Amino acid sequence: MIASWNKSPRHQLGCFLRLDMENTSDTLPNYGDSLQNTSFVVSWVQTIPLVLVTCVTLVANGAILVMFVTTKSFRRCRNIYIASLAMADFLIGCTMPLSIMESVYYPWSPIGVACHIYLIARHSLLYVSLLSILLISIDRWWSINYPFSYRVRQSRRLAISAVTFSWFLSFVLNIPPIVIMTDFQQHNSSKVYNKRCNSPHETHFVYLLVTSVVEYLCPLVALWILNCSIYFRIRNQFHNVRKQISRKNSMSNITGVSGTRKQSDDLVREMMVKQDKKAACSLGMMVIVFTVCWTPHMVVQVINSKCGQCLPEIITNVTFWILVINSAINPFLYGLLNKEYRKVLGRWMHCYSRRRTFRIKEAVMYWNIMPMNGADKMRDNGITYMNAVKEWSS
Image (cartoon, rainbow, N blue to C red):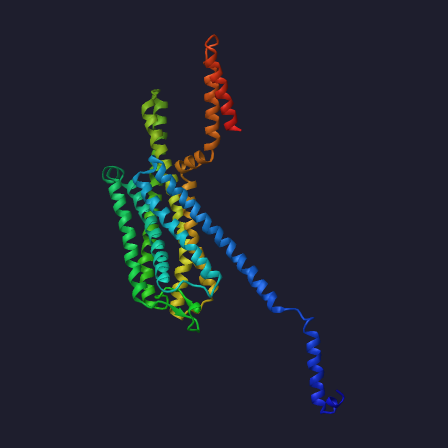
């Protein structure tokens, strides 16, 4: 032991340093564990809002679809386009869990055929959502600008054909580029878990620019033109109706003759114009939200394809989720702002209490109409029925 110290001072200094590191290694904090805990917390902070968006998308659009299926009065031509939009948004919500896994847990990604199916479903359903909003705008524009032609020519068959064609067109436009072009973009490794399920055309600037103009910019311009036309048309109709009503009121005051029927007709026209105005406002809000949600993602895609993915990954993820949030907002725009949908939703929410109240009132009526001098058997049946209702309602 003593002989081991009869060496060079450098060796002795090394021994002291090694002993000191061995003694202090247990007292130093474990930075690896703290980093793992921090990344775990960050992952959950990112995951919880995305899961909430997914749940809202599925529940809200699912409720719209159930209303359309169960309520017979909803199966009109106009609501067929809304049902198509709700179906597309609902299926987009079904793809959101995979998007969450890909955004939060970066090394994970679907591969092979699963990647193809995921990309085809995501891109096609997003385009169906866009075309459904366009069909709703065209239907509203047609009904306001040409009401007589709309009533004569519009039919369920025409609406179903338009919806079917929009779904077919969306899948036809998105399947060939994804299947034929390059499948994956690798990130500095040949291992399977480092492969990313990205769109194969995201690095082709010319192709992406052309498709963005054709599939996004042209429909967006058409949406704004249609909705501006609807807005100005309704505003002119509203002003004309108000002028006619004020003119007729002034004439009736001068002549002393009251045209009750004409006034009622004018009031009906004013009410119809107000209904069209409310529907146009909800549609306009839908178009504004669509523009705000879609434009950042399309711009980021074009910039990344030009500069070779120069933007940070977080910007791409944020703009993508802003795009997807549009599917969660749509049912609230045409649901909460529509009186018919609010009525059905309120009926669902108060179904249990209304049913219980109806049963109790029925029992009370049955008890009151029983003859006082009748048979004891009817009175016993009434008491039994009242007890059953009390047990059921408690």
